[in-house]
Length: 212
Image 1 (tube, rainbow, N blue to C red):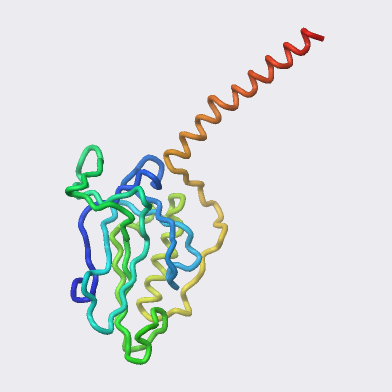
Image 2 (cartoon, rainbow, N blue to C red):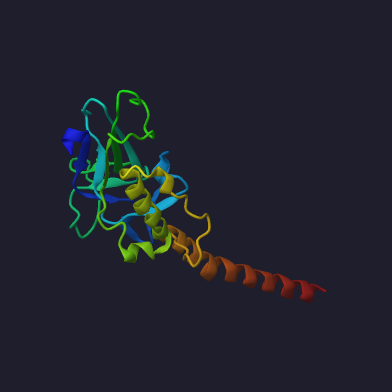
């Protein structure tokens, strides 16, 4: 990959801030960069994903862009087999970590373009997660958008940009996905806050009736 200006960093992205439920090694990636492949995709679910970035030296006529970056509170864990994930500044890499790289070899006529295609262009996509298009992921909450990433990647690699599609804003039968913190907040609201309001309202009405 180095000969194409791409750097692959082994490890696993850990993201306690934005992950699927309590699985911190399954980050929910909010799409923030602009690229034809990612158009209309709000979020992706990755699991056990390694770091992929632009190398320090990019060969002439190659254009390399980093995408799918984890949150500010994430890091690249050097020991994916650890029983408990804790950031070690001597061994781990602090986030955000890019999980994908799109690269293309440009022609002299479109060197500064990252989108315009040529039949002679070479194109490469490297994603640090080999399981992002598995059925189990595609059927899990935000994983439904992984399908668009896979199909759009194939069409871009084969220079069939006309076939790249923007996913529907509302997907039928797509289950809601919440992070672990969101689930805990909802549980707190249902178990503590809501009953507390009802009890407080009952006490208020009782006291008001007695005074009357």
